[in-house]
Amino acid sequence: MNRRLVLLLVLAALALTAWWLQRRSAPTTLDAPLTDFAVKDTARVTRLFIADKKGRTVDLRREGDRWVLSGKYLARQPEINTALKTLLRVEVRSPVPKSQEPMVLRTMAGASTKVEIYEGGSRPSRVWIIGHATKDHFGTYMVLEKPGEGRSSAPFVMGMGGFTGVLSPRFSPTEDDWRSPRVFHYPDLHSLAQVEVEHVARPADSFRIQNPPNGLPALMALDGRPLPMDTVLVQGALLAFKEFNFDFIQRAMKPATRDSLLSARPSFIVRATPRDGRQQVVKLWYMPYTGEAGGFDAPRPLHDPLRMHALVEDTLVVAVQRAYADRFTQPASALMR
Image (cartoon, rainbow, N blue to C red; front, side, top):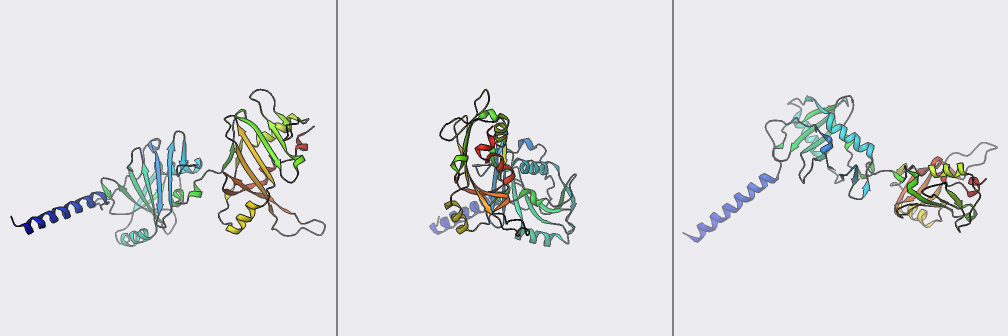
């Protein structure tokens, strides 16, 4: 056989193989639309991967009885519950009229969010393409893709039973929207061995609370000197460690402002040590007051009465509510009898 003919046949076979592989790996458009968006058993959902056209991604994975964000952060459980409820209760409100399909699909091609839903394994069971809202904001345009079957040829107006509104905010592609705001979380205070609150500018106001597994807590100075305490007040200070969350992450802070804050002496350093020995350290700074001046006989406050800056997890600058922080940053004298 002519060598040139053999070469042409080999090239043709390789091209056919490449085309076949591409057809298998790329989603195909189905003539029959897919409408089974809902997940019947959300307890089987093990992962949600969310991505948008701007390159933002969120990776949420179930680990036992909790969800983890990007493999390292605890996820917000209320938002997870909302997403799972949406997977279960989503429903088709209406098909999109044929005359409007091209416009809807073009809009979704430019701005949409992809939600990969995994029910175990390395391959999603279904993929939602979430587009924009309808004009009345009572529905959301969506397309369903099922790996192994293909992508639906038609979009649908989707909603949820018992809910009127847009579904896209329930699947935000921004990590901060899913990150847990938890700072201190000791629902069982017996798991907390010790707390230290250092008043950086006023060392005499600093204190340590030792919390034995049995019996009453003990109040002392940071150098170990025992202090006469009011047991009820000391126990009240510990209660603040049951659940202490931040309000929001300070992403809008300019780099120079952030560097200036972190280089400044903190107002307080709080160290919480559970019985497993993994100490948590949180630094707190008063925020400067930026509101209006007081009245004629009222001095202008130095600090914001509502919020404080805090450094958590070594690198994350957040805002916390002073009403809660003040409960455990009070001076030692406030806990003494």
